[in-house]
Structures are given as structure tokens and as C-alpha cells.
Image (cartoon, rainbow, N blue to C red; front, side):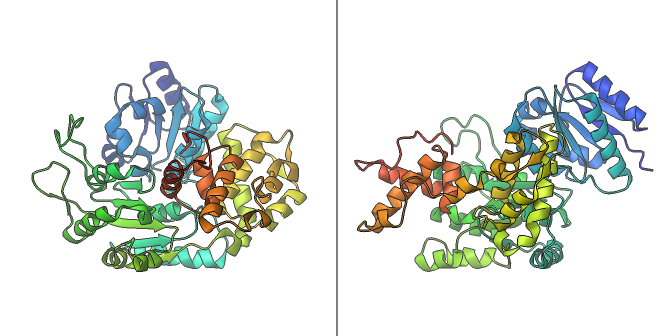
Amino acid sequence: MNRKPALIIHPEDDFCHRIKRMLLDLKCEAQVCTDSVPQPAVITEANYRLVAVHEEMVMADEENLSSHLLINVGHVPVIIFSDQIDVRRAVDAVQKGAFDYFTKDSSAQAIQTSLARAVKLTDKGDKGKPSGSGLRSIVSRSDAMATLLATAERVAKSNATVLIEGESGTGKELLARFIHQKSGRSAKAFVAMNCAALPENLVESELFGYDKGAFTGATKRRIGKFEQASGGTLLLDEISEMPLALQAKLLRVLQEKEVDPIGGHKPIPVDVRLLATCNRDLAQMVKEGSFRQDLYYRLRVIPLKIPSLRERKSDISILVEHFKDKFCNIHNIPDVNISSEAMSQLSGWSWPGNVRELENTIERAILICDGSKITPAHLLIDRQITAPEGVTADSFVGMTVKEIEKKLIGQTLRHVNENRTHAAQMLGISIRTLRNKLREYAHTDEPPSSASGNNV
């Protein structure tokens, strides 16, 4: 049996003692850290059976937070304990790979059960498969996904650049993490950056870092994503949104294997395996001149395309069960059943938002379900089917394409209560594109929405 100890990272001695006693009941020794969070590399090297960590301690430590503790120790079950009840943070933690997530209101029995499962899995050598969607498994039974995963696992052993294409919400980042875990770099860092989530003037410093004094406010050196990922894997999500000027710099990094931090005096060598995702037609963007052809071919050494959920409907039922178990666990809700009518409606819907839309639908249904069974009334799919108020084919007759675009964006924003992230997903465009469109409309007499747009 694996006799390695567990690691408890928490500032409260009483809490550490309580968790340590639970682990001792499971015949698992434990080490305790109450004042600092060890670097992920230290945890990886020690090969702990599991890590129980106080979330606020990790968030307070900028260096550890930027190093992605959950991802870097992906072979170890990480159980997070938080002082605050924050559903979004809980979901985000589980999606990033947390084995479980608990708050002060969580029962001792639930914690004990989770610890027992984690210990059992590591004793079996199962490398800590998470209870949520997690990083280590992709839920599917379709032949198309089986073929894709087999190909991904084969190419994972190499250092070749992989371009993962597919519609928004299909699970491109999850496939990227799968490739990292199956690679020889799995014990090293997996660092992800969404190219569409940052203002254009910040992308370069995020990627390549900067030296102290490089610009006003640069009070200390900051390492970029490439240096953070050195020895491991870097994922550039929504690569199509990278500014054209930076594409040349990225190409040089890939060719020379070194980065030039802003304000730096000499290049810094990096050893990074690059993965990129895209939900747009990069080949078409190359023809239009908005994406460099040489970078396109450099990224597309291994092209992988994830099928949409409507192309693999056999996955819907097992994904429903998977998400049901996941969110019942996160929200501490007893297991609920799904009526045959609800399952029929789920199977018949086209899922334009793909797996992400299905996941959100199941979480919402679990939260509003007033009993032990989910019915069609809890799915709210009829509302999803209904077009935004005022949007009909006839309403567009006589309008220019520009006017139609402006009206559609405005109506969609109102339909989703001004949430730009949701609106961009429904419209099939990136957040950056939506932001640029709204900035363009702001100079007209009738902008599509009066919202401030804080939901980006």
C-alpha cells in the first residue's frame, strides 16, 4: 500500500487537527502547513497521497496562485476548503481539477467520505480521478470522440504543436488538458491564457512578462505565461483573437524557443509545448489577412477538431448523469432523478451552446428543482428556444446587414440581462469581438444596449 502522507495546508490549528484525525482513521499520516503554501513543484516531488488546502491561503499568495496549484499537481487529489460560500468559485475549482470543494457549512461526514475516496483512489494508483468534471477524464461514449481521444493520446507523447478546433462549448480546453496529462510533461506546469479575455495592450506582458521599471507601475519583475509554463505546456485559448502585431512575436518564440520580456536586456530560454484552441475558421482568417499564414502552419502541425454535441447525441444521457452528480455534490443537494419527459427534451434539443450549455442547464435545473425529480419545467429549454424579444425574420426586412447586426446584438444582450459573456456565446463570437462591436456602436446615436457591460 502507498504509505506516502497527505498534506494539509490551512491556517487554523484546530481545523488541521480535525482533518488529521480523520486521515489517521483512514490509516493515512498527514503533514501540516499553517503559515505558507509550498510551491507546486515541491508538492509534486513529495508525491503526497492527497492535498487538503485552504482556498484563501492560495488566493493570498500571488506566486502560488499564478502557478496554478490545482493543475501543476494534477496527479494528486486536491480537496479545497473555503471560508466563504461562493458557487462560482466552487464550480471553477472543480473544473480546474479539484477533487472536492467544501465550505464551513459542509458536514463532517461529507468531508470524511471525500477523504476516504481520495485515499482509496491513490492507494489503487488511480491518480486521483476527480469527483467533478475534472481534468483527467472526458465523458463520452460516441465513436467520433473515441477516435479523437485515441489520436490525442498518441500525439500527446510528442512535443508537436496541436491546434484544437471546434464550436464554442465543445470542450476544447478539456481536450488540451487531456493531452497535457498524457504527455511526458504531465508532472510540470499546465498554463492557460485566453487571448480574447484581455485588453490588447496587456496580452504581450501576460505572454512574455516584463522587467522592473519597464513602464509606469512595473515595480517588480513579472514572469509571463511562457516562463510559467517552461518545462510544461502552454495553452493559448481562442488564438484567433491574438492581435496581428503579436502574432509575429509569438512565431519568433516558437522558432527560437526564447522570450524577450518587456524592458528586458536579454532573451530568456523556454522549453514549452504549445497547444492552441480556436472556434473560428483560421484558414479563412488567413485569406482575409487577419491571421498570419506562417503562424497558422506553425500551429497546425497536429490539427484536432471536436465534434459538436448535436453530432454526438449519444453522449447527452451520460453527460446529463455526469453533471447531475457533479452539481448535487457541489451544492450539497441529495441525489435527484430526471424524468423520462425531461430526458426526452434534453435529447431532442440541438444544443447550440454544446456541452457548456448542457452543463449550465443541468446545474440550473438542480438548483430550482423543488423535489427529487427534474421535469421539463425545470429545464427552461423552451425559453432557450424562443428568440430574443422582437427578433423575427420579418423584422429584418428592409434593413442593411449592419443594422441587422446591431439590432441582433442589442436584442441578445437584453435577452441575457446584459451579460456579455452569455451574449457572445449565443451569437457565436468572442467576447473581444462583441466588445469591439459595442465600442463601435457607442459612437452612434442609438447604441444596441445601455448596459455598462460589467459581466464580461
